[in-house]
Length: 153
Image (tube, rainbow, N blue to C red; front, side):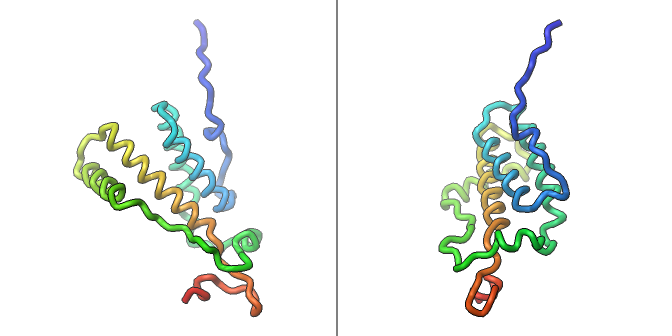
């Protein structure tokens, strides 16, 4: 009996654990969902969803933890960013997302179009989430390093 070799996508073997920095976990999430959006292979899509679920599950319990000291410098800027992360789908797409989620929550079967809409929502949410996670938190001023949120108030 011949063995059929199936190629493994490199993202399916990306290592991560509870000790992985949240910025790297956010990058992994972004890569998983980007590949998910581009793939037509149902098996790869399922595997990527599993990896994304695992990565988010590792990330979630740490979301309220203080930023580790070794990451503070990478999240500190000299001046306030011109652009900050924001979730901003156009009104038509946002309506489609809401309709699709409503149908899903009402127990409707997922059509290919619904799967596409949910994949788009997941893509937008993960990209927004990643941008928020990696956004600068501090700014260097003449008076020292200050929290950006304090400066914006």
